[in-house]
Image 1 (cartoon, rainbow, N blue to C red):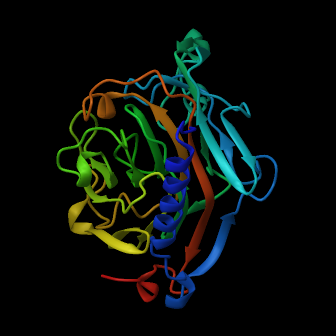
Image 2 (cartoon, helix red, strand yellow):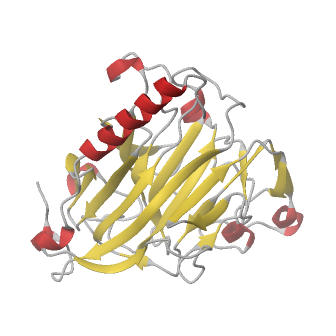
Image 3 (cartoon, rainbow, N blue to C red):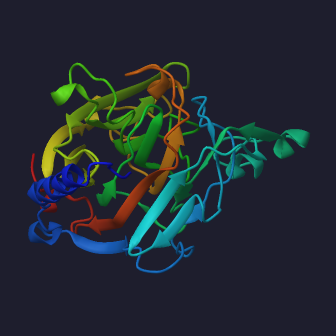
Length: 325
């Protein structure tokens, strides 16, 4: 966005530069024993499909989201060392249900014509996963990202079970490393009165609609629109969330459970999970908060990802590499 007042714009740019430089750098995970086992630095000119899958559907995530996910370069692209996941205000038509459901896996089996149903949404966007190409049980998962602002923008860095060992959502769990909604919108409880929170969350418990989630939030340091590093350290008995190297949440095995298993104290978070990156538009959560609803202006919006890295600890659990309690 350009500024009619060049002098003021130059001053703002210089201020943003120094504010970004002031964001504390994350300590090198190797200093506590973590070993890098997988990464994508996005140095090529297209998405590395040996590491990532495209999601292509207009399901809406069960949250009444307003986008179709596509594999088009206008929605998912790699250039100049970063991944861009871009939402466009563009009416898009596609499959009404996720590909895995159409294939009869992930706890859902569609029958007959339902597999081929189509849907239409007012936005297009991107969602990519490492499923069956990068799947892990325990470790440190980290991404450096720049998030979009605006009412209805819902970026996420998260993980879902690969094998659904305990049954359909949320019996097999969900790990949300970072989610944000409506950044920059009105928020009386946020510094400066503008939304600046990110969330770390676990979903688990009984079958929907008796499901459970536990969430913690933290406020981003300025600038909200700059790059920040999001991470989780996942052990058998606890998980810890970090933003820019600052630990802001810990949940333990006493905080979660699955109705599908009573033998393993660590279930459902004792199975392999995969990474997901996406940008949703609208949906129940963002549309009921801040300025309420969703704004159809100020598009395109993008999540910019500098890197995604996965570390594991030689002890197999992460306890010996713990960064903080």
